[in-house]
Amino acid sequence: MQWHNILYLSDRIFLTDKSLPSAVLDELRNQGLIAPDMLRVHFCGIVSYADGLAVFLPRNHNASIEDGGTSGHVLLQALMKYYQDKDSGVYAQENGDDVIGGRAFSLATSLLDDYRDNGLYVRRMKEQTLNSGKVNWSRSISHSTSYPSAKGSIYLDLITSRSRYIANCETAKIHAYVMKELFFDYGMLWLGMETYFDEPLELMPKPKGDIDMNIAYLQRELQLSYSERDIFLIKGLIKYLCTKKGITINNVLIGVRKFHNLWESMLDECLIGKYSVNRKLPVPVYQIVDDSYTTVAQKGQRTDTVLKHANGSRFAVIDAKYYEASSPTTAPGWPDLVKQFFYQDAVRILEGEDAHITNHFIFPGTKPALKSVHIAKRGVAIESATDCLTDYQPIHCHYQDPIDLLKIYVKGLKLNKLTETIFKT
Image 1 (cartoon, rainbow, N blue to C red):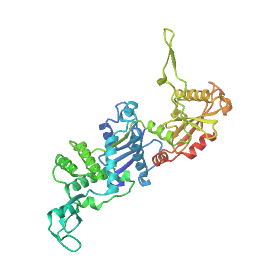
Image 2 (tube, helix red, strand yellow):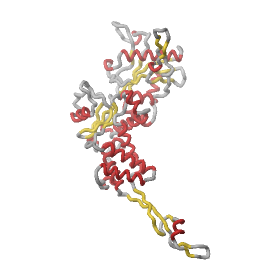
Image 3 (cartoon, rainbow, N blue to C red):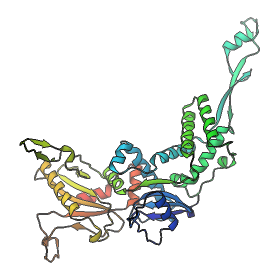
Image 4 (tube, one colour):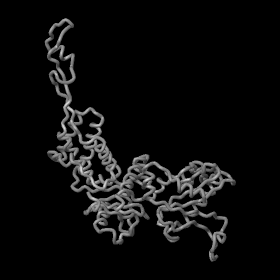
């Protein structure tokens, strides 16, 4: 696949947007990613369509395919990291933030990485030889004639063995066939390469028979294998072919419907000074009709992220908001504001009145539009922050380039600049 077959689009793009090809729209509908009442695409990831691959990047991104494909590359890596970091598939499904196609993609990337590190499968065979290779002394003594000498018995015919490597065996052909498919589907984006040509794969002939025959051959080969790499590879090839069995068209699909979960997870991991407070926050207590009281801890307050400054007296309550936030009308509403005010008060109860606690929203984007949120009485002309109610502290707004965040998250780095800005407000 070439770069001209890869199309960059955006999560939350309108279905009527002219940059969204009808073929991509049809594929999204076929995959069940567009409901009849939807006006926008709610998907961040990669989907194949008639003309190539469509890459849906996070909203408010500023990337293009001319960047060398790095944005699609880091998106794939971030999705894989997020999938592998999940506690379990059940957890993901219950929370509605599962990675679609995560299991199949995990298998594909493990095979791609294995090929990059080790190359095509080579069968290692041990053959018995005579006077050539490693000597088998027990067999030589029991099966060969010895000749006496002044220094002891001499064996002229030594039974030996040596390893022989076969590079064009049927397993190697199956391996090459699978890798060519994977490189076409994922290779360039997963490896971050503009072009890819692998001569050994292209020169390797196709395997014999159909998928069932290939699976049967690999299962027999698995019984004869003993190296850790060979066992891992053959098992992976069997899983891939079993998954493909009965499918006539290979549809690439990897991504998430609700990117805000990944947005929150990445910011939570990359901001500096994370302070775990959820288990310390106040919880609701219900009075029963018999005048007893029941605490419901699982329904307690849960913040996105709370940061604690190194000096120990400054705290920041963070809400990672995957909103457009290009204007006040596309920013969070009253329910989101109320939660932040309550979280701020809850942290103050824990840390005391002397603690300096600030509130913050973090939106995706490269062009900041909002600076802060304030609360004021109705009908009052607002010319400065002093005209707003002092009972409600401001919620500061920050913007983080989503592509930069993907890169930082994948590399295991930290958001130093953003953290510093947060604590300066």
